[in-house]
Length: 323
Image 1 (cartoon, rainbow, N blue to C red):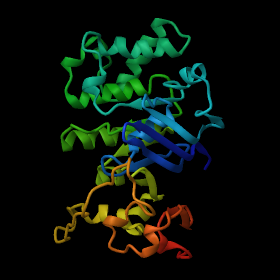
Image 2 (spheres, helix red, strand yellow; image 1 turned 90 degrees about the vertical axis):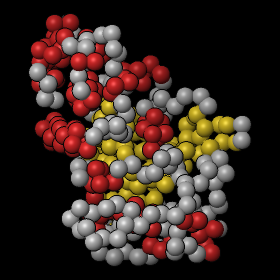
Image 3 (cartoon, rainbow, N blue to C red; image 1 turned 60 degrees about the vertical axis):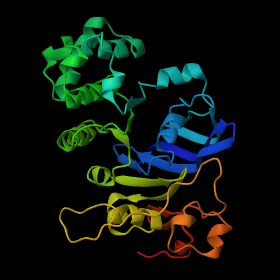
Image 4 (cartoon, rainbow, N blue to C red; image 1 turned 180 degrees about the vertical axis):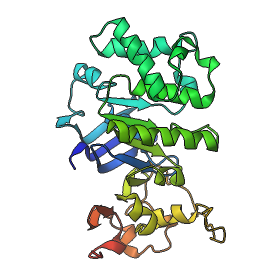
């Protein structure tokens, strides 16, 4: 299966009065055509920075220091702004964290979707309206509700509108940035089921950014786990759940209750994510890792392929190619 997106050695800094904060450090991963990839980690690990870097939407004092973001053979990091204006929304779109804040309260939801279509495609307003109605039906909303205002919708319905808007220009890739945060558990499940259904029906590629590991493992094909600005493990969802190799991945799984196994002991990961301005030398997880060795304070582990399509950045895995 071919890759639609390749992120190669991406490094993004925020330049502060205390010094540069490395929110993304030498990040590499890919997204396959028709795949849903989960990007997981605690708050402050750099997930949203990676998303903004992919779209070249990093604002001052942030800056992409190095690396490549290749979409269908085109490097977005070196692309000119006019090229990016054509790519954003049409080739890559975003489902924002809070649809309640992203929708304009003084315009109907239909007018907002129509505007995005007319802005990026050479079609008539009549065509844009018909597409808007089809999109609303696609996400489970009556097409006649296109004349409704955001305040007339529930939180879950607003999130469906945001999904419809993200689909409006038939993008190749959708980035969902914590798009179910703030919704109740039942509505979260409904929105995620909708996105999984759309992924299969439309052959969509999706990056699902979240701190909610159970939610992501229920819908994603592969998962990349970030810690303190770096990818520490990247594998199929099955391998992450049943054969996780990095101590941080294992810690996240152990901190997650299992409804099917109520006797499972839940344990937290001690400590907190390090300050990205004053990062520790060596492995960034060493202060919270029960397996830390002297080497972990001196060297930073590289992301190695420990078995087919399973990458881990941990010295415990060096030379270990178990099947």
